Image (cartoon, rainbow, N blue to C red; front, side, top):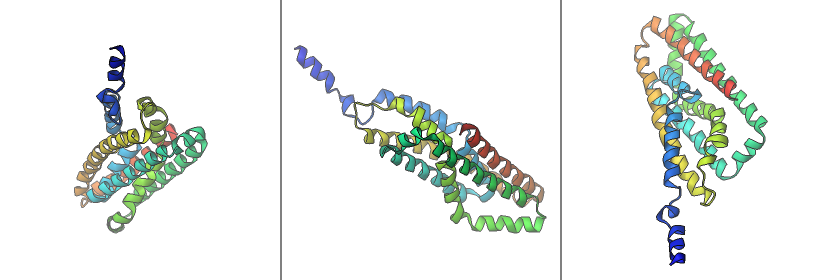
Length: 227
């Protein structure tokens, strides 16, 4: 009888699931907080929505979450442990991403300070290049976001069950992470895009361009401080 009880415990229904339900519930709660907290990615989503509109905001969100997916694949292949062992390499990547954001912010500020006619043409050029740049910019921001390293080095490991296969767990965690980030980033980006409807007002356009530049540079500062 004692053996039967041990076998029942060893093969409980929870053990056949990819992720322990209790751990996964705790992970979902942690990810919800992380997803809605303003950071480089959400600030970038706001700035992109304000500067380029809804379509670009959503393209940027897809780019950022594609970068997150790359990190999950890298974690499954062991690259996450390699980056954690050699943080200097990631630090250089993070600084490059911050510099890129500063460059985007400065471009927005310069455009905002141009005369009204040139300012309008600059805005038109930005909107026509949306499809070419928004996805790329979003990918660049997220692939160099120090929050990613913090996530894989400090947040995710406690939720991993060493007694279960790793890859199915990573798939479940990736679905939750990317799903919540898609919702949160899209909300931030569409909120920023809602302000873009007033872009025909010169005074608003100028102030808005300065705000976009400040948001992008602020996101760069967060990357530097966390890196």
